Image (cartoon, rainbow, N blue to C red; front, side, top):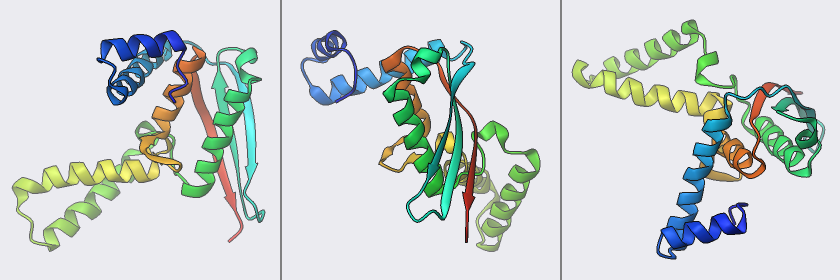
Length: 183
């Protein structure tokens, strides 16, 4: 169910009194910790993956990086590239992460939100909190890593990548991506 090794699953079940849901959560958290440890490693190998959606009206190119060419040639790595590419085709993210959003785009979005809230007559003291929540929603709609995964909206693309990092034991990073469509 988690893709973790059998001994890791056994340990997780024991540590969580054989509660399957708690054990799964434990393994997911462990995977995030493992991914964080590996995030500083260089990811200079990888693949460029192309995806053309049925009907040939939408296509994507994705640069997916890893540490070794051995991992880049595995079925699991290519499957991750395919899933991310299909996700890009479906949801058309504008940026990879929040860090890529320009100050100009952030300020424009905040101004729009603030003006909407003022027109609705919201008090000044709660506008700041509402703006923060709406900006988080803006990021989750427009930044690939923060978007809910199309096959399981309880996970983000970032979490999907971290799960694969935990399984294969190498750093994986999304380099660049592009989406093309004929309207």
